[in-house]
Image (cartoon, rainbow, N blue to C red; front, side, top):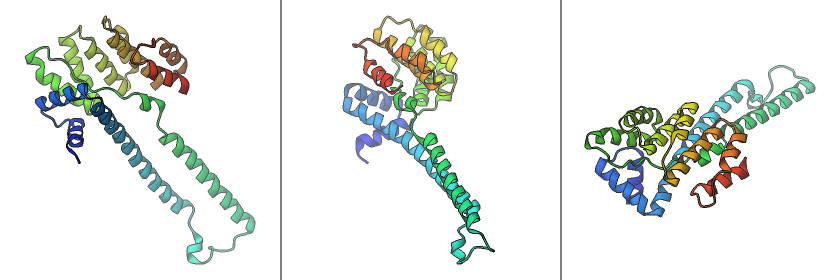
Length: 244
C-alpha cells in the first residue's frame, strides 16, 4: 500500500486527526488526480460490499440446491423406481428454479443508476467558530465515512447554530436522503438561497437524485433538463437523461 492509498483509507475510515484531515482535503482540492483516486476507492468499497452480499447469496443457493435437488447420482442409483416422465418433470423444475434464481440475482445485484451517480463529494466545512470545531469534525468524519444516520444528527446541530449556511443545509439533505427521509431532504434542497451558482446547482443536482432514488423518472427528467451547458452538473445530467 503506497503512501497516498494509506492516506485515502485512513480518511475514509475517519481515523485522521483534524489537522491531518484538513491537510488531506486541501490536497484533494488542489490535485484532481488524488480526487479521482479517492472516488475510485469509494466506488471500490461499494463494489466489495455488494460482492460480499452476492457471495452470501451464492452460498445460500448452493445450500438450497443441496436440500431440494439432491444428486442421486452420487449414490449410484436413484431411491426407488422413477418413471422417465417423473425424471423429466424434476429436470424441468430444476432448470426453471435455476433460471428464476438467476433472474432474481441479476435484479438484486446489478448496480442501480442512483448508486452510479450519487457519488457525494467529501464534506469539508470552512471553520466558522472555534467552539464548534469538535462538532464540525465529528459531522465531517461521520459523513465522509458514510455513517449518514450519525451525520444527520450532527449536521442538524450545526445548522441550528448556522442557519444561513447553505452548504450545511445541502449536506444535511444528502444525509437524510441516504437514510430514506426523502421528503425532508427535498425540502432542504429547495430551501437553498445562495447566490453562488455552484451551490445552487449542487442543491439542484441532489434534488434530481432524490427523485431518481424513488423511481420518479418523469420528475427526474424534468429537473435534469434545467442544467445549463456551463453547469458543472450538465454532463452528469445528460448522462442521466440518456439512461432514463
